[in-house]
Length: 317
Image (tube, helix red, strand yellow):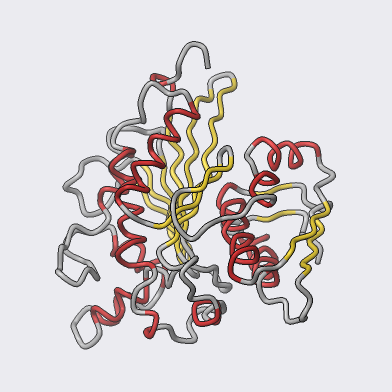
């Protein structure tokens, strides 16, 4: 199977081809234990696509027990990306069903308070930052909590809404249950001082738990579309938590407080919403928000932050 030249799940011009490639990765129907993927055509891959690729490779290795044969990228920048961020290290190691597993800038673990703290400590040590940017620590913990509480629950609620629903019934194993994946990168060049952080799961997405929560209420129709569900999940008082905790996911947005440079993008199934310039923690909507609804469906939920780290960079970095 050949990779496309561009893997990008946010770009309208490349999303469908990217999703088709990702779907093909774990839908091999042959009986062979060998999976062969040719990355030589690959010239561009987005951060979120890189993280999704990481998670799906985990499924092949650990759920299906397959051997993966890679033809490596020809493009020098992509080749460097795979090497520097631990992709080839990851593919050569076993991943257990517990604990946090670290492969340079790629990590995976089972959602818990302990694993979120382990992730935070590792990012700080590896990146050599003096501390994490404003409120990013709490946002990471909220993302992992959401995975622990929502992502792999209520699997019986899955409908034909997603092209990838079969994944949840076919691979609902101990390895997958409650699992998160993370990719982070530090970009320091000229005026650019950025931390890129992506956390993903392969759960049921944001829309399905909210839709089930609102079924039979006045809000029932509000969460039909994935991009609307992402927006609603950010609002305090709208929640699918069994105890009606009701905080929403406002903690995910707080790193955007009082900064024009920080942004967050959330992908869930067919939806994507980019948030910027979140003015205050009590606001129900950020000052700027761009929502998209695609035809093709990804799997699970991906949260990506891009935050300025200039004041946190160690002089010896």
